[in-house]
Amino acid sequence: MRTKLTRHLEQVTFASNGWTLWTRCFELVKLQRKDISLDTTVLDGVLKTYLANETLTLSKCTPYFEIFLANRKGWQKKVDKGQWEADLRSNHYKIYPRPDAPACDSFFWTMIWIKWLEIFHYGRTLLPNDFLFPAMSANGVMHPGQPISHDTVQKWINESTTGAGIRGNFSTHCFRRGGAQYWFMFAPVGQRWTLAKVHWWGGWADGEHRDTLVRYLLDELHAYETDYSDALSPISRGADASLAGEHALTRPASTEELRMVHTSVAADVNSLRNDMRSLTSVVVQAACSTAIALQHLDSSHRFTSVSECASHTTTPPYTTQPVRGAPTTAEWPLSPRPIVSPMPTMALSTSSTSRRPRVPTTASSSQKLPTPGLVIPRVPVAHLNGTSSPKNKSWKEIVEHWLVGDRDRGLTTPLKDWPREWYQGANRRFASKYHQRATIALEFINQYESNEARFLAAYPEAELGHTQLLKAVNKARAARGDCISRNK
Image 1: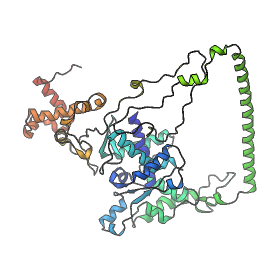
Image 2 (image 1 turned 180 degrees about the vertical axis):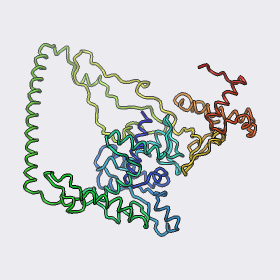
Image 3 (image 1 turned 135 degrees about the vertical axis):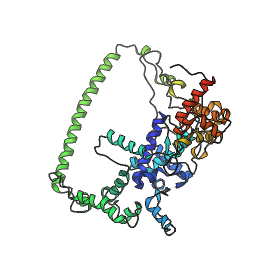
Image 4 (image 1 turned 45 degrees about the vertical axis):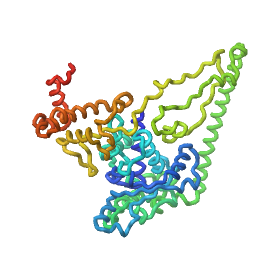
């Protein structure tokens, strides 16, 4: 369940930021914690208001955090030309709360995502070089030093459009193009952006914005304004009479339009009246049937008082095993947008002994979570430029992880120093990978005394990657009698 929640939270946070900032995929996946400037003392108060499902006042809507897109394409061109000193504000975006648009509220989702990573995965605050959108293993382990891939983002988009029944093929560029078109054409009247604002927010370079903006906005606007597919509509949107048909939303309603609205409202009211009559009839019949049935019961033996029943009824809240460093359930709900309300208490029982609700035991209601912050990096190691180490170097990276660790990818303690409880019990998801790494590293260190030439001569499979090397090492150990192979 935690892995599924993490995946969905990362997806919705990435999508809301991509649509808000109009980013290309490679620009957003490389976003790191050091690129976000936020004051937790102020913003945590705004987040608590969100989670309490309270209305954000004006004072709560003005705080913001700032994102610097260091990898923005237009910004990189300025850096290459030495122009960045002349424009220190480019690519700095102030993100404000948008409770009116919860699906694309990047303020809320980013704050929630950072808290989720820190509390339920790392057990620490994010480090400056930690990626905001880290890669996640199949077993739910996050890799703070490795960003998600382009293929992962594309898979999210395909799953979302298929699940929503949206036809067509959408690339990762849909966030950038969709955000620009919304604010230029489809935002509410009075909130639409000028071309100058669109040009700045999209970070287009001075030489490319004309053709790009024409393709993104003006061609789309022309297609919208010359679309007469609704020519038979009772109320015309008049898209060709003003910018994106704005006048249709601001002009006074005609007499014919008001008559149509009145007819529609009157029909809805009459339907509601008929439904209320039917409901009243059903309630009266149910009440009469209940009264007749109660006459045959001995109330002194069949009912308990409200106060007695309430004193015996348990109303357990959702509880989880406390995670080291994490707030209690009352302080930090698990769901992203909770609406907290008291649980109703049973007030009536048809038995002299009130039937108490079953309270799930600890074993059945919650599973002990792994120790936060534990990670065994993937090999071959992925680099910031999107490339990976060659397969024939994987065994060296495994030895390094065993002896030294890899702080850039979250392995702050070398694998040789891991206590047993870090890969057993609640952390048993690490057991298989830990023993595989130990087998390769100890074979090199103990059996071949860290002699690289002898090791590679004995195991040419190392050139094919660590998976083939592990098979060869296990086969050699079985031949030496160091381990007993299991018959399959």
